[in-house]
Structures are given as structure tokens and as C-alpha cells.
Length: 454
Image 1 (cartoon, rainbow, N blue to C red):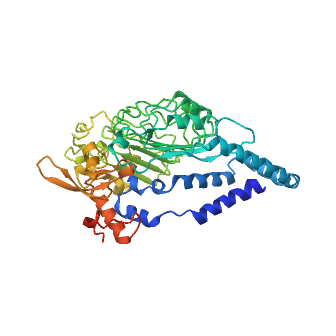
Image 2 (image 1 turned 30 degrees about the vertical axis):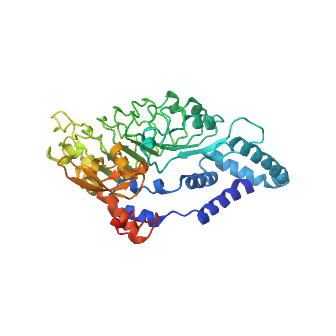
Image 3 (image 1 turned 90 degrees about the vertical axis):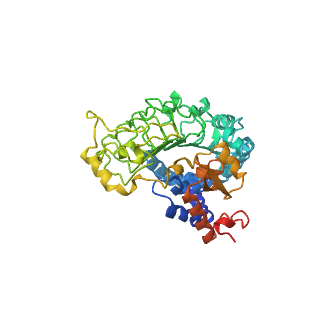
């Protein structure tokens, strides 16, 4: 009883008293950035190690099945019998701690590991977090650290439940991961992952999948048709920056999906049916320039958030309103080498009454226009914009225009990408607000004098 209930409660109490989310830093993001923006996601600012520790403690207290309930009752009934073994358990635990700590000592990326009483070669890692949240140089962009060997080593025991990589690679998930049948959380940001292996469909305990590609890589080229055929507890799915991904698999086996996000998937022409997504609550579509229509949204009876932003033909090609090819959402993008949209043909489907209703209900978060076309590429670092900053955050910089003029910008690390010059006025506004409110990071009066730092 003590180990099953009290210890997880103590872990949660520790998290409650010791962990602090920097709301002062996060609040300006909520005030400045529009709905659906990456910067509004609190989980991206929070400490991933703290989140992982809280999840482990919280999951230990959850009763999710009849078996869980039966086990808890049995544990209470056997409490008296177990009490006499407390000393034995404490001694055994001490042995396991020493054994497991020794096996995991060489892997600081394993922030939480299980305890094993017998000597073993592999670290029984539960949570693997290997992130670079502050890349600075051109080398950081073109040659990120290869985390393949780390993932292989920490997946060998088959205990892994959380895998989070940011600004790391592998290009492929190592075969050792298929041993981790209890894997629940996969977050690969800017990892250049090129494919999901066939065995990924067997990771049936997945709850969270977020795969974001790198601007300079091929990223996902295809996804197995059966990947989402039987993932009954998957609740979050986000795929972003996969330029050459042409087709999405059917979402037939994810009945508990709550949040669905597709971003910068430039080759996607259609989305899979929403027929079995009755529990979906959030749907975000960001910069899908080849997407001409949407599936019928009638099944989405629990939808509370729907956002369409950046260039999307569904905003102006006649799908939900009259065709208007002069709209910026339907115009060509020479930077990304994307053609202009065309009006829907007579034989192409229009928005159903239910879909039209959602467009009207969420009008404030659909087809939002950015401040300028330049902002569309402001979060795509180039060697030139990286070198402008010289590794100095919040420095003033200027981006040359085609007419020999220049646009003022700020050296900013957008979405945990490499530090680069961006002309996004929201980034300047955000930093000024942070300085005015004296929140971290503390301003440098020399570098940030132009922003009002004194």
C-alpha cells in the first residue's frame, strides 16, 4: 500500500511544491501570438524532465481498467501480510537502486529509469530526453547530434515509455525500439525522421505522437497505411514540416484521438476521413497549400477548437465560400516554389452543411492573414540570417529586400530552431513586453538598448 499509493502521492506533492511554470514569461506569448501558434503551447516552454516526472507519478495512481481496480483491492486485503516484509523489500530496493544506477550512470539522457535487482548489461530506462532547445550556429543547423546510438542503447531493455528528441536525429527509428511495447510518448522535433518502420503499428500503447521535420531535410516521405489502424489510446497527433509527404494513412483505429495537427505538409492534397474521430476536440491546419477540400466534418461532434492559418486554398478556392484567387491564401509562393491555387472544378466537392457550420462557428481562428508575406518565411533560418546574429540573442538585424532596401529584424530563436534574424514584428513586440515586465531572460542593456532595455 505504501509503495503503490503513498510514494506516487509524495512524488506529486514534490512536483506541486518544487516545480514552477514561468507564467510571467508565458503570458506575453498568449497576448501576442494568434490562436494555433506554436508559441502559445505551454508544454513547449515547460521543463520536459519535470513533465515526465509528474506523468510517472500521476500514471501510478490512475485506475484505468477493471484489472487495475481488482489489483488495488487485492493489495489492500493483503496489506497486513505484506507489512512484515517491509524490511525485506527495503533491502531489495536498495540493491536494485545500486544495480540500476550503475547501469544507467553513463546515460544522462535517461532522466527516469526502472529498478532491477539482478545485474544486467542494459539500462532499464523509462524516459529518454535528449534535447537542444537553444541551437546557435550554422553547424547546429546542418549537423545536429546523432542520437541513434543513445536511443538504441536505452531501448535495449524494452522498458522505454517516453522518447523525446529536439534538434537531434536519427533519420530512422532503430529496430531496438520495437521491444518497447509500453512506449506511450514520442516527440521528435526537427529530427529529420524519414519513415515509420512497419513495426511501429505494434506500439499499441502510444498516447502522444509529435513528429516535426527539419527545414533542410527530406523528412517523412511516406507513412504505412496501417500505422493508425489499431492505436486505441492515442490522444494527440501532430505532423509538421514534411514537404514530400504526399498521402496520410486512414485514421480508422484511433477512436480516442483528441487533438490533430498538420503543419507545412506541402504535398498533401487530401485529409483522411473524420468518420471515426467523434472524440476529436482540436483540429489545426497550418500552411497546407495543396489541400483543396476537407472531409465532411459532421462526425466531429466534440470539436471545440478549429484553426486554419497560413496559405490554404480551402479559404479562397470556392470550397467554403466564393472563389477568390486574388486572396493571398491562393497566390503562388516563390520562396517555397509553390504554384497558385485554382478554383474548384464542378465535379469537386464543396463544404457540406456541417462543415460550413464549423467554418462559421470558428471564423475568428480560420484563414488568418499574417502581417506580411515576409513573415511567412521568418521562422525558416538560412545560413545568411544565422550569421547575421553571430550567436547573440535579441540583437538588432536587417534583412535585405530585392529593391536594395532592408527590413528591420530581431535575432530570435523561433520554435527552438537555430538562432537567426527574423523580421516578424510579433517577436519584437514580445521581447519589448518581456523587458517592460522584467521577466526572464534578463535583458542586456548594450545589446537590447534598441528594445528599450536600460
